[in-house]
Amino acid sequence: MTAKRRSLTLLGLAAASVVTLAGCAGTPAPAGDSTDATLTVVASTNVYGQIAQEVGGDLVEVTAIVTSDSQDPHSFEPSARDQLAVADADLIIENGGGYDAYIDALIEASGTEAPVLTAAEFSHDWPENEGHDDESTDAEPDATATEESDEHADEVGEDAHADEDEHEHEHVEGFNEHVWYDPHTIAYVAEAIAEELGELSPADAATFTANAEAFVAEVEDLEASLDELASAHEGESVFITEPVPVYLVAAAGLENVTPDAFSEAVEEGQDVAPATLLESLGLLESGDVRVVITNSQTGGAETGQIVDAAEAAGIPVIAFSETLPEGQTYISWMQANIEALSAALDA
Image 1 (cartoon, rainbow, N blue to C red):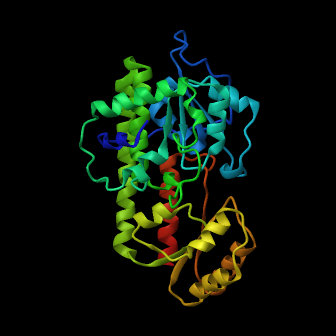
Image 2 (image 1 turned 90 degrees about the horizontal axis):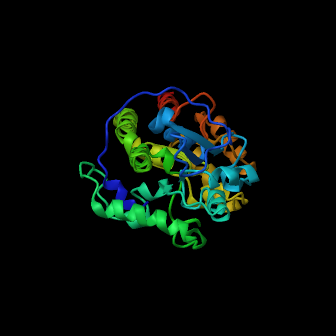
Image 3 (image 1 turned 45 degrees about the vertical axis):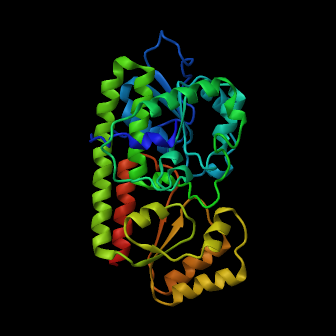
């Protein structure tokens, strides 16, 4: 899977039911088992697992490795059962960019020959996509993209996973890997999932495409909500303790004023330098910051100080999570985040 897949046509929409994904639900059929029409998909987190379920419907069995908000994907330790799920998968979906390195370790250890779809490669910020026209979504898939996808699957069978640089397993300097908070990127990911599933089961390709069309139309509704938010609050300042929702904030036309040194230290579990903390507290005291956004799954002493200072200054504080909350779809989750952001800005 390459970034060139981003030239796929943005397809249209359909609502799907809430899907509960088990960490390793059931025992997936072996990859390539022609006696079972159900395709097995393994996703690094329940975010991508739910999207895969939307696209695949009843024709896929999805296993998500990280499913709980008590699990930090950055430091997650997979089990032998997780490795078995990866080994038996027909399709593997990862975030990439260094976010979910555990899935790369499982791929390498399992020796799987399944195609691997890397969501980060569909981001307009991905290094190889520099200069890509995000609005050019009406181009048909080209032969090069299809050929490179096939080449990727062949490389997996040749133990290409052992090459860290080739598959971008490690953190990419300057790249925000939290791409699932960018609805536009996720639209491309859904299309790519449909294409991969269609290649695995050509007889069902039309169904996968229709399901992706349905999902993407709902993504477009999210983007419309973000446009409305931008119309009302464009240029207003927000403070984000970790860079998790930065893409969503940018799509809403808001300015992230958090010092990079603060958010990077919190994300990496390090102490925030005193000077950086003082600078951050000064931003809250200035009266320019409209909302503080935290990560509901992680925190620390410095984050607590920021929250206390915000509350003392009367600044609304909201929390976003990294994994899909129980009972939510990707669409309902992102819409709830947008509504929470809108409500905080209007407070």
